[in-house]
Amino acid sequence: MGILHPGSMGAAVAACAAANGQRVLWCAAGRSAASAARAEKYSLEAVASLAELLDQADVVISLCPPAAAEEVAHQVAEHGLRGVFVEANAIAPERVKCIASLLPEAEAVVDAAVVGSPPVGGKSPTLYLSGATGPVEIVAKVFEGTAVRTRWLGEELGQASALKLSYTTFQKVNRVLAALSLGIAREHGVDAELMAIAAKRNGSYLAEPEYVAKTAARAWRWGPELDEAADMLAAAGLPDAMVRAAARTLERWHASKDDSELTLEAALDQLATPFTPSDSPLGRPAPGR
Image (spheres, helix red, strand yellow):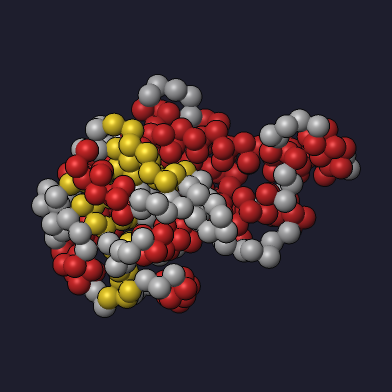
């Protein structure tokens, strides 16, 4: 199996395949020291080039930031792939189908979506799959008996991605709303009272103020995912303004990428700091804006 690329989720997912007896390859060319460290931690096997990875892998999983999905697919298409390509990025169904059209030589393209936290420390995410049954069974077998559970949704490409973005719309927007609620409450000195109210309500994101800093650290990934969700809403004729606003709000945390030391207070300070959208690498403007 090949993984493109070993980010925090990709490396942990790949590690489950390796623990299941799979030989897992990653391409070291052009990758960061952090990627190399994650790959070493999970005993992934480095190869010198993408061509070498594609020549050897029966299954290749693309798991990267949404904006890079087509670039990765074009690189794979340029070198050629005879095996199964798993498109596991948080992108709209239309993009999945476009990516499938770029890979006519592949044995098959499987649409996939990871829902849940990386499979470490006892956590067990679900890898939702859609596509033809034969290739889906090949992918499911790679993770059989591991912390990565698999579930087939149907034969239509895009179903897994649609489920991911549907959940993203709810979960990530609510995390952003919780941060904004805490920010305005802090501004008026009633944040402790707000959290006391939230603590009485089961399942309220407001009852998890410590997650605001985690949201800030992940904003660089979440913003583009919400833009994808907004595109899907617009394509369905549904209002997309709320989701796009959440994506733009996440841009205020552009300086906190993967900052594990960020505190709640610092995250709220950043949220209240004016910024220039054009300076942010996170999202992109809505179509036509």
